[in-house]
Image (cartoon, rainbow, N blue to C red; front, side, top):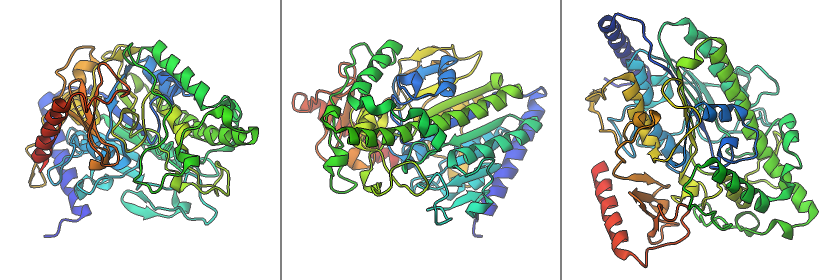
Length: 515
């Protein structure tokens, strides 16, 4: 028999109902497990949000940090699709046998909602697609504009419950329709349904901000117009000082020198977009144009924060906020993909298509080196915030390291549930991460044996303990001691070739274990 998406959905839904009924019968009391809200931004830097040192107005994300814990070092997979694949399966790499996070919550009796971006690696099985694991889903795949283009059609399709829908069918509460807003519109609408049920809920909210193209509502852009005329050099220093005051990184952390984009995978490097140059070397006309570019970027982040506020307010109004774990992170570092820029229309409106340049992305990734795709910290380290009243100490900083593969085992820990032996007849692939619950409680956990990130072998990073090897453009391994050098200023590969060899051999063993 051919297994279709509809068949998969029926099988999973039946299993969930049976298991939930069984757990209800066993427990015999009210279900007090927390609701879970997982929020992810896209292509933003470590220091963009206020609670990580930035000047962009993000009061709602800042509230989550002030009422929860901030991680100083938390790794993603440095690019959109690998991060989502690892985040939602708990695997660095897999295939048939991977289990989606929402399959765990569904089997535990949760009501599952997703609204936002779905973008997986090829190894993620079809049965992990949104329509097969969420009770309600609205999603799109990879890049698509924020405003409806003048053509009346989006670049890529949107899907509602697995069915492709046209632009005029997208539910939206405000015109002109804007993607960040209508992603939230769906989530908030479905939360009303969740509140009517006696079961807890899982909301996955992967926004697209601030992925190119740079498009924002005019009223949001106006808030920031002129703010960036001080330039990236001054703002980068200010952000670093804020990070130091917040105590997010070790005291010996130094800000990396300004650095252009070294990533050659996107085509020839174009100096205007990829090189670093001093702000004061520019004309007033150039400064004004560049101010607009970053103002639009900031406006996009601001609008996302406003929408996160809508979700928080909804939970608070309905009395659900105190028993809800809210997680916030970013899929990779800021993205200077200059080849996606169309220069004849300034950034902002629906007919523009603009990408952030390296100098502004370098500001976003303060104090780290490099950008999206790179295994260097600028590409692979994300803010990570967790708020859970009664469990997580408010306004705390976690100095232990985590990774997106830790999210699934953390949820299993919260659900007090075991990882399954199989999924749809396939042996379940063993998880690669470990629970963050000890860290949420302010305790110490045994550090994972290794951390892995970076887009493909060209930009791979592999970390064990304090040491990390990383490649750029497929070149030789670089080596850094992150305890002594958190921002990767001193390449130790020539000085410690035996350590490079040790880590590279361990990396090869890890890869063999994936196959």
